[in-house]
Image 1 (tube, rainbow, N blue to C red):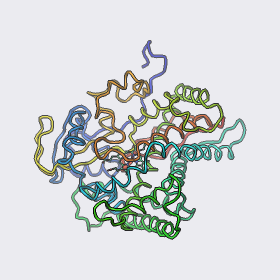
Image 2 (image 1 turned 90 degrees about the vertical axis):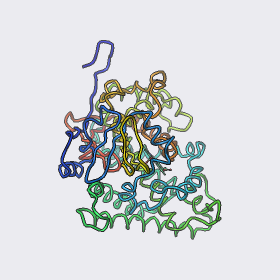
Image 3 (image 1 turned 120 degrees about the vertical axis):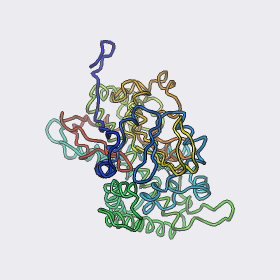
Image 4 (image 1 turned 30 degrees about the vertical axis):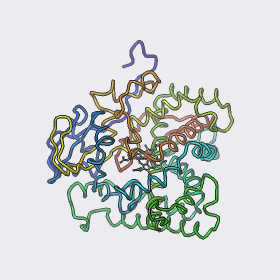
Length: 467
Ligand code: HEM
């Protein structure tokens, strides 16, 4: 399928087949439990607004940049965070930054914003590069003849590595027992979220049983209890607030409400630290996982990235001074997050009746901005399903309208950790690709499953050869 002007073979990595129009409610639910993306109607990939009713709830898929700008920015007070999202994530994330709204959200955002200042984030690069290097070291330790480390579940490796980064930056050190509890609980919760999404869409009352509910509740409690334990321990350490920039927890402990001068309650601290843990390591791990998959499928791009990194840094550890000189690596990361946005859907609720495009929507409509759908919309992108990092060459990227490429969201609720995630993604991808070659077995075509984050079904087995 490559054209004569295009020297590289075209790669069309796995997609999710959309739902037929007019799927009856229970058929829709059955798809949602397997993968919420399978329930997205086909028209959502071609039209600006698709509106229908499901189990008595009005739902609208929106995928036109100017309308997205309206929903997420200009009319953000009309399109508020959906109670549906709160219901799925609330038991774990409480009223923290991601899930809160109104004044509760505002003051937390104000307090937390300085935790992600550019200079502080750059000071974390050595921790990030070291975490990636440690993974390469683990693969090296198991490698044998011709440096072959075997087939590795790269998704599990990336989760472990990005957890290390969060634990040594935002949390500034949690012990191994706490880390193990958090990681297990996190997995138990995340793997079951499609059930919670289906129960919410079906309008089940919050008290009603559904499969996986007990396990999710248990996982949430364990996760929150482990985080509370860390907070207590850190509070007991008198110097908690005087550590370096890595001490986000210390800063949150020291924060005061601008009006009341009250500190954050323990409950709110748990909400936010759990949010940073959840929002902060799964997403970046998945960005790296999908990027490595795409590079394994497109070895020419992998070679380009490696050549760039070696040219810029040789074999030295990646540092903040190298990041601006890695445009190819950055393009690959951006294109990976276009095809596989780690946070695939944003959910809002219309607080009043309104019209989006020319579609009238009643009050309380659930407005879905599916980043996955938007990034593959037929009317917006040329060859939307094709892997083409050169879409992000500066002259081409400039032409992408605001609101069309939004892996980190848009407007006042834009990802707070975006600078952290970009620096982390870039420094880790550079370190990994310089340290190892990733190969595809020619068979594994993982379905992207929307379980709050976008995970590959069956993990991400890739061949790894140490370089
Ligand atoms: C590749 C990595 C990441 C991606 C793709 C991502 C994506 C997103 C998106 C799309 C939102 C907007 C949600 C909405 O509008 O409903 C968001 C919000 C948020 N993210 Fe991230 N994120 C990433 C990494 C991180 C990291 C590393 C942190 C922190 C350590 C973080 C913390 C947050 C927080 C606190 C919010 C809520 C912001 C608010 O509502 O004020 N994220 N993220």
